[in-house]
Length: 345
Image (cartoon, rainbow, N blue to C red; front, side, top):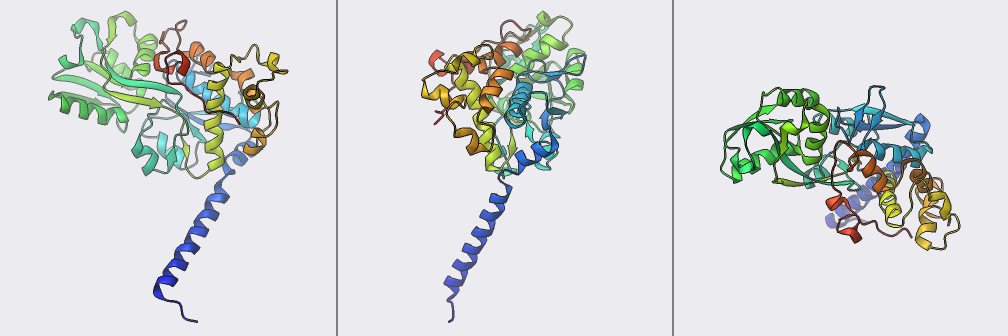
């Protein structure tokens, strides 16, 4: 029997779709399998940003992004300590993830359409609603970004910030001179040494830098304008649906726990809860953990060892830290913020 050209083409397309589907099915679950075989989660972090990811004098990594790594290690391996941190520059971060050098990138990285569609990676969840802005020495007397005409601006190459810098100055018909430095630590040294007038980054990064790097933090101000929205989140390769779901629902678990009033200190007291959301979240009713290939009490362990979202925030960037950030958009939805976890069911 002879096939028409149209039928033959359709058959080829169907076979190709089956092969592609099989390849993706084989990829799903491979990341967790590799993590378990290795016995540690490999997490890409920044080269040093106080409150987000920074190694202390003892080599212990701390910060909001670090706590995301700890939560994922607890989810997959049962311990927040089974993490190897890999500090990466803005230009190193995506190739390291694409090449499989790290399992997850948790490094104050803005979620954009181009990154999600063009380079085979994806961000399953938002952990921080931020915005990009400018920091300047107070002695310059500048109170608005509109006064920055002709300024020298320190910026990292290969970042969303770099493009936003071009866009903002162009749209406001202002001129500037970029001072492009790849290494974050060297860039901050250059700014505080006066090699540039302005430091452009996410406002959380600016606040962290000012508190940790400046000899006198009060000598620097962050200008009021946000030049762009900057939702930050962890990134993974886009070919493992199981790992994508685990990252997404681990973050959702941190958010849901805070809304339900569950924290690291009281999580054990919910063992007899009758609330269906609580029971599913903590694995008291079986099903969700098994669906992800994890222990049924994976989120119980995450909350016990890392805390809920509010605890993570206050410990790293809250009002009792040198960063002193208000929750703002990072508050729960019922307190005027944007945090909202889909239901566990």
